[in-house]
Image (cartoon, rainbow, N blue to C red; front, side):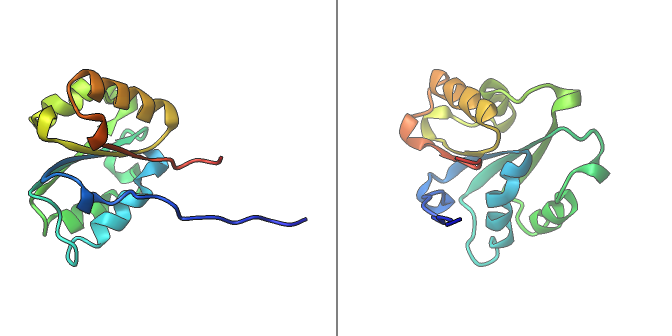
Length: 144
């Protein structure tokens, strides 16, 4: 049986965003952000980033990669990590992201990767709250 392989084809790079960014990862959607975090020493982040990591786990010890992310971010205070435990905190919404980050939607770049329903709902919410469609970037991280 033949197999067809393809990719990567994405343009999911934070260097093309504004100086004020929000990164949102849901579950395994953390994968591209781990790459970004691991390369921060060589590729500095923008002026300020709020990184929202939405997980279903209730305790820190169960959250994948959390210890590694915190260790990296000790050297990068310009990146604020917000762990959102959906089972405890509820679903992440665009309004909640904007409130917690204090960001002006008109000058914000958003990068998201996670389950399709989460990313779709967030994208609609950010558009409704004034974030330009040109500044909302999403990585499709699923089987097609």
